[in-house]
Amino acid sequence: MRFSFLFIQISLVLLLGTTRVGAVVPEVGRSDDEVIEFVPPRELDVQSKLLIVVAHGVRCPVMRQNYPAFVRLYESYRAKGIGIHFVNGVPQDAPEDILLERERYKLPAIQRDETQKILRSLKLSTVGEAVLLERVKKEGWIVRYRGGISDRVNFDYVLDKPKNEFLKEAIEDRLAGRSVRNKSGSVFGCSISFR
Image (cartoon, rainbow, N blue to C red; front, side):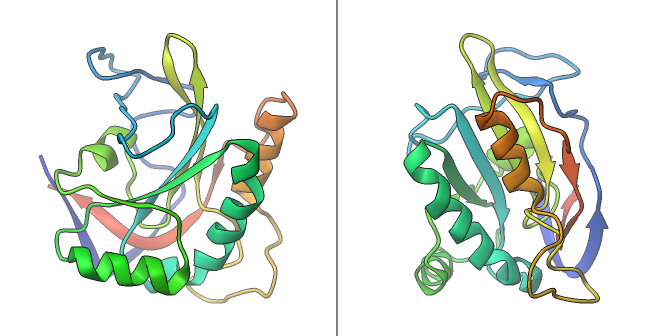
């Protein structure tokens, strides 16, 4: 089964996929109907306890509106050992276009996911959708949050400042040792279709 990005169709996704927030995401080799398999790319420093993975697409205008917020988030939390990683599995996105996008918007690493294995394993269904993963010693990774970065960008408007910073709030909850209060947030972006 392969994913394809449809840049023409843009849809609102509140919460998709069969992986529920709080489910353990095991390393490859284990399987269960309620969990997904995830092996972080080699390029990632997986020593961090928290890891943010974001579905990326070069030509998604809504995603581009959110780049500055993702860069601020990266700069705010990298010193605390929280990794952020963009994953691009769009067949139409050439490697040179991905590199230009990264340089233009000063993004952290973008992993090319030609087989779409990472997107599939994390059930990322919309460009701009993020998951906050927390490392568990032996079990693997737990999905603590799934959704958008904030409510600043919508199809109908772009706010100067967000009213809710869903991803940042989830990170702060985990850093303080609290359960994540808001485990999902709405995502606006270019839809990823399953075939």
